[in-house]
Length: 426
Image (cartoon, rainbow, N blue to C red):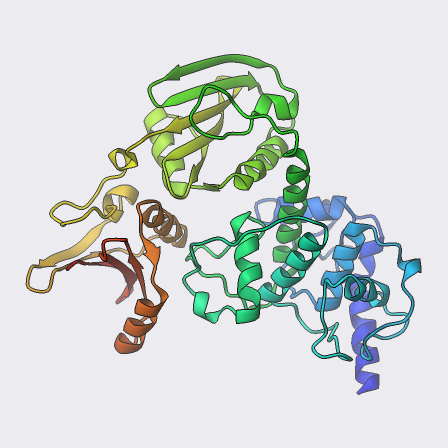
């Protein structure tokens, strides 16, 4: 067993060796510029948090181990390893690259072992365990975190010990679910995913450090960080009307960096990216933008380049339903999936005998499903875990139920390779 541990440590030490050496993303042939994680990996490489497994490979899909994760966190914290000698765990070998970082994390209450003597440094880190480590780290530094109220649709599969941490990080955008609304907490976290989570973590911390002196736009009935005050950019002009106000600045040379950082600030104040509002407002105005909205009310912030200017738009409305088409003929309002996403309707039916209606569409992109769930929640529906589990068991097909305060239900599921929406009322 000891020989096996030594061999594993040597292997991971070899794979992890580039953490201490300078690297650039261009040298890694397996990280393409169009990959979803490209910018996040580049961010971590530039900060020397970790590099590749060789001079030409980053291995974005390779699982991250517990020892690796703690080492990266320790390097971000700039831990003085000279202050930590020996190990509290029998399986953390003397002289291993992660030895002193694990001891730092154990001493500061950031990590626990599998038991009092066993840490499992070479075991793959799960997404939910990573969340518990991040939350202990943040709360140990004095940051206050609160849980997100809306749950992932696979909430019942997230370990009980990790749920609190998962939803605290999800609430501020440090971790996210997959496009279909699931979190997959027990899945191993890949190096690309960990790079993304560190990117979100560090940006959140840096944005949070700004919030003590943050300024907000005046003259609007919503709390929106003042882009000009944050980035020292002169406000060139404003336009306003019923339910909106726009702010225009010179387009910065580092546009994408500023947009990413500003988006993280928005997340601190409850805004989340909305594909629906992005597409809707883009189509109405005739040019591409990014839209972020509050979950429980219609307050939208948009970011775009407009005629050479950086444009921040703010929109508010007391009745958001005027912007969201609803199904006709139902006794309560349900967002019309087909009209919102221009998706082909295969069939529909309404049964007055059992107070139900159903709509079957061609299977859409997974990201659309996640966005539709957000729209349901913004219109007063909340995930009902007990009902979902009951009907999933009864039907043998995974079904997700959302319920509003009046007791009306909207269910979504797959049906013979298509997308099904069921509506039920009393």
